[in-house]
Every structure is written in C-alpha cells, then in structure tokens.
Length: 73
Image 1 (tube, helix red, strand yellow):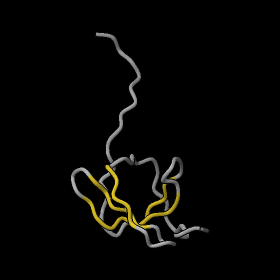
Image 2 (cartoon, helix red, strand yellow):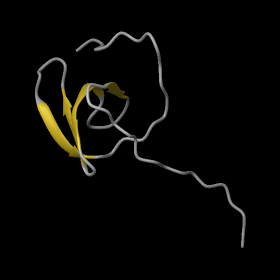
Image 3 (tube, rainbow, N blue to C red):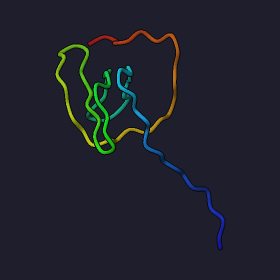
Image 4 (cartoon, rainbow, N blue to C red):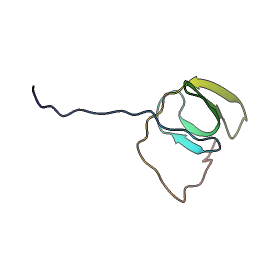
C-alpha cells in the first residue's frame, strides 16, 4: 500500500441561528442559517431577507471571533 498526502473534507454541521460568511463562489457573502436537514440547508440573506434552500455544500475552514456581521451589502 502506497502512502500519500490526502486532503479530507467533512460537511459542516450547520446550526439554526448561525451567522456565516461564505468567502467564494456564487453564494459568496453573509448568511443566517434558518433551517437544517440531513440533506438541505436554508439560508437567509440579512439584507434582502430572501431565503434559499440548498443542498448542503459548505466545509469548515476557519472560525473568527468579534467580526462585524453582516458586512457591507
């Protein structure tokens, strides 16, 4: 068996009420978690208040304290 460096991904365990920031991609920006199931996450935009149901897609990369949320629109 060969030995390799392997990058491991684990789905993020969203919690209702969480304030999150997605840094890249089409969902980039600030969001509030409003519902979570095994397969879906519902996020609310803090500016427009629109809500979106998406397949769970995020992976944890960093946690910051004392961050202004939401940021600028």
